[in-house]
Length: 551
Ligand code: FAD
Ligand code: MG
Ligand code: MG
Ligand code: MG
Ligand code: MG
Image 1 (cartoon, helix red, strand yellow):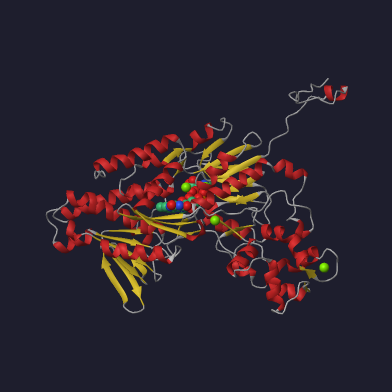
Image 2 (image 1 turned 60 degrees about the horizontal axis):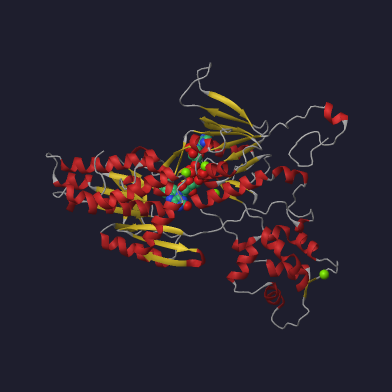
């Protein structure tokens, strides 16, 4: 007989038939994860890996803490300190997850297979290619740097995406200083070698320019006293300002600080060509100008990886720039495929597409009109499914749906207002303008990885109670709420131990104390105690001895 303690898993019916039929562990579904960056790693760390047969594929066998990459370019932090081997992360999960160091080059959604290629080994055909089946595929491959097909960029510029990039930049800075010191160069040549150009005034470009400036003024100027006055750092940005994604106060502070530091901020300039020793930029007022340079770092935003572009063509997303998912992070029209992080974007459902359905569901008494109360009753569901409604009310400083109804009706209002479908449409006609695209940040990627892992952990439960996009669409309450991003704030380190931060609720904080907040947040966010120790000791070493200039 079955134990009542609940610990005996099988044959609890007590019947002979159940005893004879040997209990079988159900075959676990195959989950394949592409990528070991912020999205993929966070997903894996949160997944209940006993529930699935999990395989991870990435050309990189480690996770890299990207927010500290700019610190690696100046030697403030060592490359080792910001990476964690993926196998160490997987080992902590009980060692059941398999990892293959390879890259996926094709997704075949019809047959639920992916095509992979290893760069470090070959098969019997001599090409290192292999196929992997999946039931669920989590695409977390990140993005590539976008060059906008500007000639010469790939050949002559550094990128700052990977740990190797940061190491190369560091070596290149040192080479420029050593070259500029050689006895046979004239003044012009020395100047050219010491002209550092950063293209792109976003958070990465700005932080890199700031950390390079610190490295030069705090450390290198002592070591290269005879040439230090020849150093120049230029930051080129096509828009009218740098850090446009931040509050105006931060932008202004950053521009002023860079001005005082002697960093030449060229806004309104578009780089059109990069040759071996000159960079050409364009501005409507000045036309083309070419400036000699020693080293250039290109950081103007991100684009979609070629194999994802191919995948998008296959699934009818050829006209899009970024792979689209729904609010549950599922790739549309593609069974079992999910995408998170920089490689994907959420296509938020528009209220106007569903307006008749929303009206029908809300109109409980089938009167053909909606009272404020009827709308109120479905409002929570509307907020979950269409967060833009809440954002819209906030942006118009409306206190609730009654305000919206009143505004749709004109102002002469009594208590018992009712809206017909046309008036309801009018009331909500502008809410979709509040649909927001999420930024390509580690914060978004990791929250998506965490959300998706939680959904996977509850998937079996949900399959028995199939989901439908909440009550609004009349299919029963949704098992999982759609993904909702929580913005925890963003930092912009500006050099000289000063950082700007934009915190939730548009709190702005700038200065030395914010730098300390930055130190503590980034120490806390480290993926393991090992990297935390290493990073903190790197910072301490820098405070005491300065940055290392050997390469
Ligand atoms: P990634 O972290 O880029 O990971 C992609 C993974 O996919 C990698 O492991 C890669 O090797 C793998 N991969 C690539 N191609 C394939 C393939 N064909 N098959 C299989 N695997 C593949 N965000 C913040 O929130 N705060 C910051 O301060 C911040 N600072 C940044 C500083 C720098 C210099 C950079 C470059 C980025 C910074 N970001 C920051 C952004 C953040 O790093 C990204 O948004 C984040 O890494 C996105 O996570 P992801 O998982 O989508 O991609
Ligand atoms: Mg990833
Ligand atoms: Mg990463
Ligand atoms: Mg994204
Ligand atoms: Mg009604």
